[in-house]
Image (cartoon, rainbow, N blue to C red):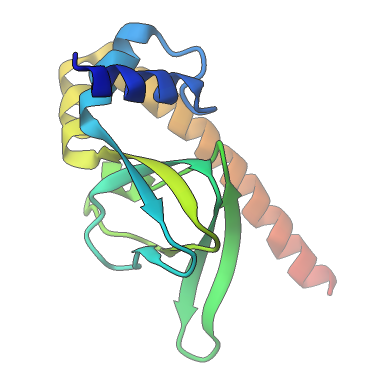
Length: 155
């Protein structure tokens, strides 16, 4: 592992999503990971486009939006440091469901999805660990969506 991979591995291990994950799993993910700074207002991905990465926010705010022809862009959720998005890249047909936009300058760790899928296939323990963690995120987001729906009906 190179010095850059070691630095990335340290940063992955500090991210909320990866805390407590075995070090050998984190070291396996480091070569697939890069840092990206998204400028305020920059689209990170667009709904319907090819989903090719998972994103782990270190700093900043990222909006998850959906485009409605009648209303334009509608904010679904705002994500912050410690949050993750991009799990569409792990599930066929590997297309984005929503738009992701940097609401302010945001530093993000980006994991190549094709490489991640390959590592998850070849290392079942790592794959299971990643999926357990994503399932917790899915569950939290589903709960939040349900609460939003309740607020709509109460209005």
